Image (tube, rainbow, N blue to C red; front, side):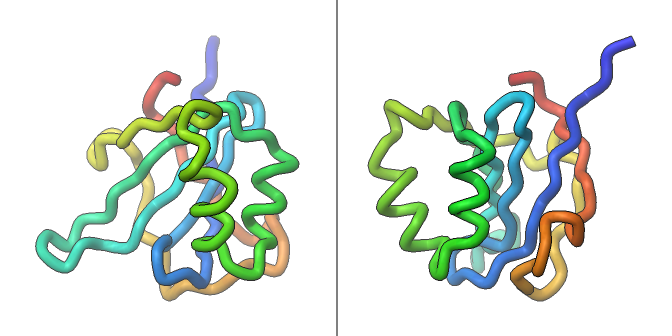
Length: 115
């Protein structure tokens, strides 16, 4: 019986993101952006080749937005990404952004798209 990997989304204090998460066994980073004013929908992207060590740096960065621009967005060839269908990504929207004190504080979310 195969199991679907779980992704833990961490609420962050960021003007760009609502939450970030990581699937260490697949080296996949998940980023949920804040809802668009026009639609109210949050876009979610998955970035490949993203190590657990780099995720720990991202989660602990003073500014996740700056980290994203400087260490991820500029390197699309190293971290190929894809937009995830909101309906296929089974999770609830994060509550008001709060940077977790530890990784254990976030709730697991089922990753429902094969990578």
